[in-house]
Length: 130
Image (cartoon, rainbow, N blue to C red):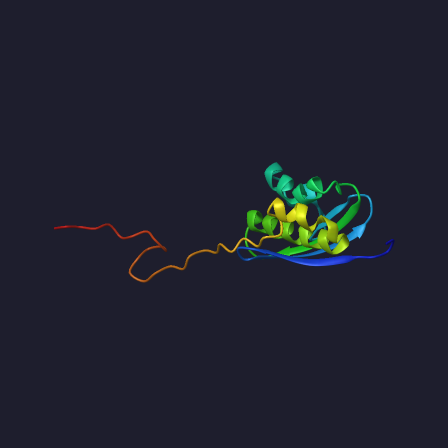
């Protein structure tokens, strides 16, 4: 088990994350930065750590990830999925637990496209009767 790496990809909105999970001390490196430096909001940090907390693997793996596209919230969701998928590759017995918590389901929601004759996807220009 020592020296092995587990790779996985996660996506959310327009964000894509590539995650490498390696046995270690619980170090997070995202785009060359620490977790606390890249994701300053505490809620996003909690979102990313959820699969590790649920599986009791918080200090057992080092995580190196590269994330691009989208905003911080989408990137956090992409990392969550990538970490969960990598944990399943590391230990197949964790699949039911992660599935039950909804960490292995890709969130399919995307931004709705803008329609012509409207300022945004659903917003309408003001209607004038006269």
